[in-house]
Structures are given as structure tokens and as C-alpha cells.
Length: 105
Image 1 (cartoon, one colour):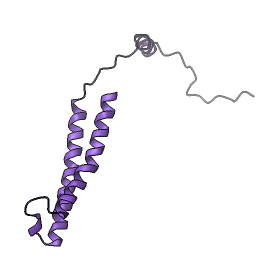
Image 2: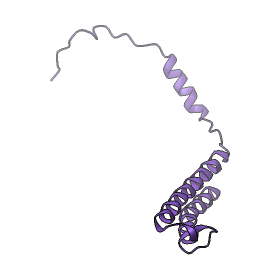
Image 3: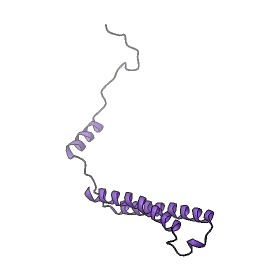
């Protein structure tokens, strides 16, 4: 259970850190060639790459979740025996069940 929480927290932090880093990098000329872009193109590309980065983190989290070992749960044997007995039990005679009954008061 602790591993699941750690993966969730890691993915949550990355979903905040990576897009902010991409936006910061584009706006402060950290990435090569970003200084040559017009302000409109700079905003467009930084936003697009930030969205792609978030989707990549979500995909990474889904990949980690799919790799989690799935323990097969075994049902309680007593419950199974009781369920089988109730299914195989003959239906009681219900003579007149389709006939309307008078209400007892």
C-alpha cells in the first residue's frame, strides 16, 4: 500500500513541476531557440509542450499502475458452500401463488 501512495505522490509532484519548468524555460530563454520566437509563438509552444508533458506524466502513472502486481482474492469457502447450497435448494411449493390472496387483518 505504501508503494501505491509513493507512486501517486511522485506522479502528482511531477504533474506540477514539469509543466511549470517547461513554461519557465520557454519564458526565460533556457531552451535553445526559444529566444528567436515571437511572443505569440512562444506562448503557443510553451503551453503545448506543458500539456504534452502533463499527458506524458499521466501515461507514466498509468504504466506504473498496470505493472502493479494483482493479488487474486480467494472467496471464503464457507460462503461458497452456503451459496451453492442455496442455489441447488429445491423451490418450495407455492400453490396458489398466482392466485390473489385475501389480506389478513
